[in-house]
Image (tube, rainbow, N blue to C red; front, side, top):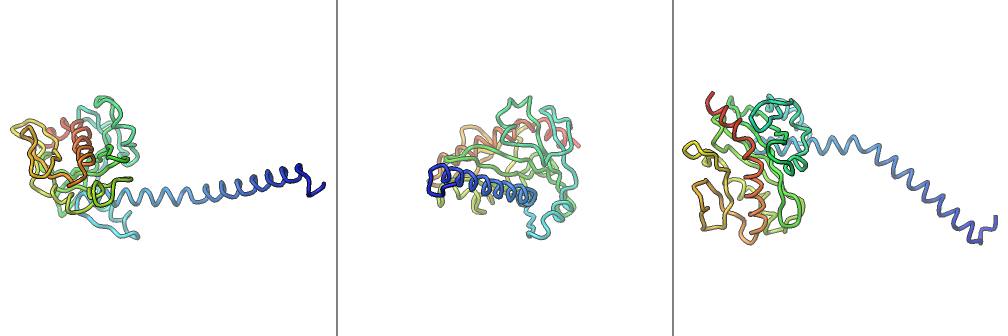
Length: 234
């Protein structure tokens, strides 16, 4: 075949694309398992962080298994409908009506005390935001929280992942006021919410991210009301 012809050039390019494409696909498949393991380990680290438990890269799975003593999937009535909370896709669940959601819950042992960790998922200014909130055994008091984001603005909305923000959730906030369930509000600094709910200061200059986080707390915590009431009476 004439190597200077257009036909040869087209065949050569097609062959090169096939070889490179096959190699890339093979590499992606080979690394898929490791990538999933890394993603799972990072998720475990975030769950533990809500309960103020730190874990290194090498011992995160061991730490998770030693502290997470149970996990379950609930319905809106607070009844268990499954046991694999880790695999629940929160991005999909938050789009459903509350009565149709699968509600993951992690039971965590911290210094001989039980904490209940609830996953959160919502929308910030530029993309998804998510996190975990740990609740004391009384079903009301907040023990700790962890938040993260995909693409919020550095120095503004991205500050939700910093301890300065998340530390506001440590120890003093409650979800029930005189028996009424009230998710924690995120408000502009110096302001108060319209209702009687507990609140934290939002991010200065990150109004939309703060609003998104406040909406996320309300949307994700409200379906757990029945379960939290149940454990509060134990």
